[in-house]
Image (tube, rainbow, N blue to C red):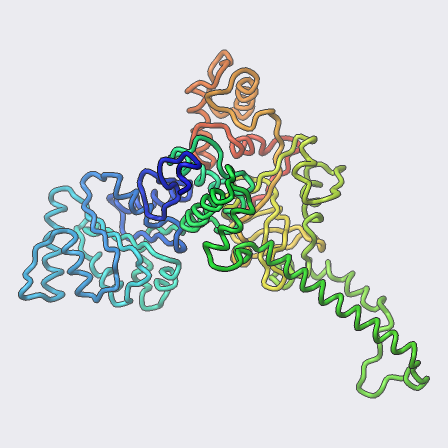
Amino acid sequence: MYLQFFQLRELPFSITPDPAYLYMSSRHQEALGHLLYGTGQYGGFVQLTGEVGTGKTTIVRALLDQKLQDVDVAYIHNPRLSEQEFVQTLCDELGVPYAREQLSLKTLIDALNAHLLQAHARGRRTVVIIDEAQNLQPAVLEQVRLLTNLETAKEKLLRIMLVGQPELSALLARADLRQLASRISARYHLTPLGARETAEYIEHRLRIAGAPGEIFTPAAMTAVRRYSGGIPRLINIICDRALLGAYAQNARRVSPAIVRNAAREAVGHQPEVFDPQARRRWRLIEVGWGGALLICIGLLVWSFTRQHPPQATAAVPAAGVPAPAAAPAAAAPAAEASPAAVKVDPVADLDMLEKTSEPLATVMGRLIQLWEPDFEVDDGRKLCSDIKKRKLECLRDSGKWDDLRLLNHPAVLRLDLPKLGAQYFLVTALGDKDATLGTALGPVRLARETLESVWSGDYLLLWRRELGERRIDQKSRGAPIVWLWRRLAELKLTRLPSPVPDRYTPELAAIIRQFQIEHGMKVDGVVGTRTLIAFSSGQANTPTLQVREKP
């Protein structure tokens, strides 16, 4: 249908896994690293969890494509089995011979043990991958634990990888499975793609399919992230429908409106359910109508009292009826005392956050004041364009707690509060167990668990762009290279090439890769936005996130 229209060789967003289209985000690479650890000499139990469609099976396939040396793999993808059926399936996957006429759990385990000892003697390791592990019965999980008791004096004969949805974590938290949970040596929860990764994912698949140029506008890719929640499977479905919609409209580029219609068709109802901002707009509309209704009622009451003035005796309140609140001044002391309450009990809860929420423009103004105290914010929505004249840039992305600590810049977080929906708060400090948020009542602390329960993962921060370019790579020449060389010299990271090169040499790329490794960043040897932000941390007039370490 749309292939010829967009000059594509094949469907770029098929939901069937295709190794040719494999996109490994930094999250997927971390998850794969955990699984690779589980195949090593000291691997035991490894747990990988993630929501439906986040790419867990893709990671397992990537592991199987590694062609691991001296490793035998049993892949069980239908774990709704009894204890005996599970062990029998395991034996079948590993090619373990057993007596079928005298089949019992004991004979199967004896045969499996003999096979594992022989494999160990040949220098081979055995790995069992259990997909959809949240469907395992507790009795089967206990049997899995018992199988790991098969060991030599130095190492386990069987390495287990449990892959499943978040319900797996709840299952392993059961008291009767605490022995198994205590044996898990590595855990990783795969989160959805962020805004930048979603754009890279879309561009990657289109490029593999042969797209000659840009098809999705940047705003359209942002809309895909918003409606899909960053889940690859939903991204594929929405993008496929969007391409079909653009073809039907004879549009060469996919717009946000086309994505919105595609999302509606893909999920079968209004796509706002994926968009907390839209939910908030509806809440504001509801509040507005409610306020208008109250005003109308107030006008009616006022009109009635004008026509029927109350008797003088009516001014005396009846017994049991509270007198009208004649003094806003009486409420003033309570309002003045609020900041003091925060100081006495600085650990906030969600109720306190909802009481201290402010408009986005106010929160953005508080952020810019950290960078440019004399800058006045007229419209928070235009801040990112207004601040460019001050050589400041906005970075919008999605991530995790540790991502913010690595960036080391104050950031505005979007929190989806139970009563108010999407609200924005400035985070100024992060510890292992809590964060400090700037509010109208002053700084308040929020427990990490509480914050993560309402944080969407979306954030916005500012960084100072000292360079005209936003990227330094193999194509860079001249001034950007001189700037990079001087910045590396200031950081005193390593011995630099001399004289200053006029291009981005492999030696400079190696230095950048080492810098990225040391700072826990995506290692690509290219000076991109995040590397530039890391370079700016600690410089004069650069606000940093006050990271509190463990005591």
